[in-house]
Length: 338
Image (cartoon, rainbow, N blue to C red; front, side, top):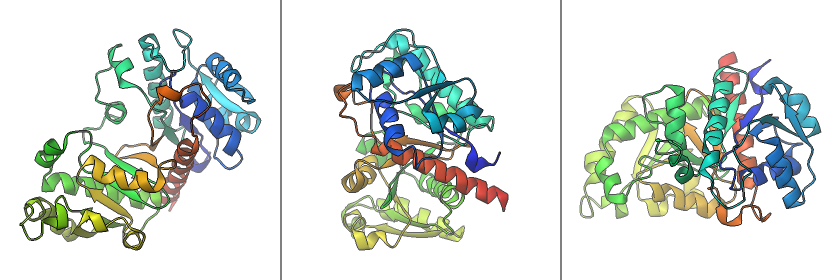
């Protein structure tokens, strides 16, 4: 079986959140255009959820991921995992935490064993998992541990119109400034360049590097991080043969004509990256983890406990994540075949 034919694994995520709802809606609205995927979840819970949402969907319990392709034509394939208690939409239950973690473990094992082409992770709720012994800062760090890698993975947010990468992620702005180094910028750019070539089929990716300070520091008048941190990294990357430009003033980097000049933007801190892409493509942006030995995407939203079970969850980001995972798997396979 070729890599592009391998199914994608979709994990359960927080069962009291919207993961199950968007999975149901994604299959109902887009299964004819999506590559086959199977959901690791409780078939009983999914049947009850579909009934609650008043959505008719055939649920097909499978015992082996190899059954996904045939089952996908008939309904939503589900690899069964047991929950300790029936989830109540919007109400966290730490007793179900072990099943959430087990779904991730199983999904990664299937991808690493070569029987699945990619993993798409529904959002988890770290507070609930911390109460059952989960000790990782987040989903991405846990995946890196399962993958056995020691380098820090890279988070990319991607849509049809923009790709952005925060060099620093979930830390305060002052901590982000203190964390930035030329080495960190270079390492992030190298991982990004490799992933865009291998998984997105982009030859010689054009990487734009955002400045940290207003007006790119304006010659040091508004800060010297451009001269001391960012420009040395850019010069080193150019010496390695990468197509890199910057540092660019962020306020003129994201409009339509500017976006024609690059394939991705390296941003210096979290909101510098996420504000523009969520402004442009709030419902369809995808979270992609670069630097793992397997393909992982995720919808770019949280568990949304406040609307869980109401039927108001938007499935478009999950559909985009599933589509992107399938395309990345095909690109990677094509690269390995040449």
